[in-house]
Length: 111
Image (cartoon, rainbow, N blue to C red; front, side, top):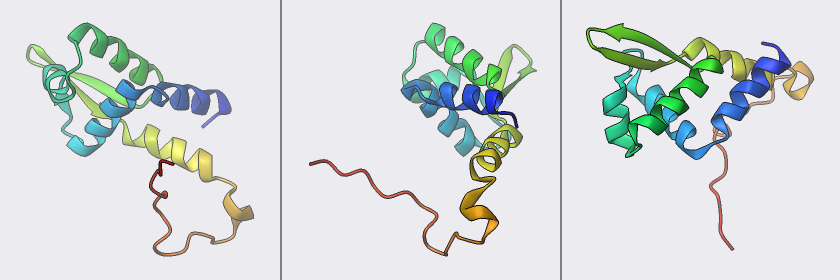
């Protein structure tokens, strides 16, 4: 993955609705979801959802396929994994640094 592609993917995910859509599609699995189901699940207006899905597709994070009269959107796992690989490519100078039990981010705290 190039820096330009990584920046596009990160920019696409740096918006609350798009991040929610992407996470929902990751949870849905390779079968994906119809746009109407995504809109219902996240309470996003269809016109807004269309814009967000287009941004995610341009960033190579979702795919769209026609199924009858519906369009099914699914997470592009290859794109997601490519972004993760790009972000961790030089982690710890190539040393094995991920210890068991430390793969989750700390919970946000409010003060």
